[in-house]
Length: 146
Image (cartoon, rainbow, N blue to C red; front, side, top):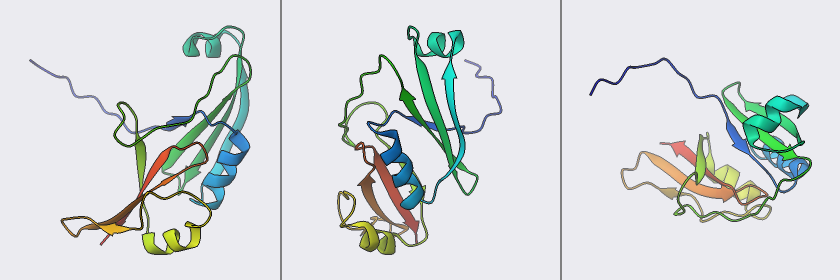
């Protein structure tokens, strides 16, 4: 079987938060993301692409160091958002971000946000890792290369 190779690059991660303002604050304060775009999308395109009827969506695109883009989506009408995901669940479970000092981040934030554990060295001793949750329970893996 021949598989044609195509040029591609990672574009963004889409998240539908329970409260978009809380998520914006979390990603700005905890991970240093900045808002690049904050817009309200309406019309046939957004309804068709999302499989919705007469809906609008607030789209907030955030970046960190110009590399990772988060797209926070707040559906205005018929969206049903639920919270709960485990790293062992099927489908998307987490995003991983390389950080400079995972211990410092953990110590500064452990009383403010949920972590799965304190930072641990990986078995191959090449990284120190922990997971934390955003306000909606989405898991973020923090990785410090050592």
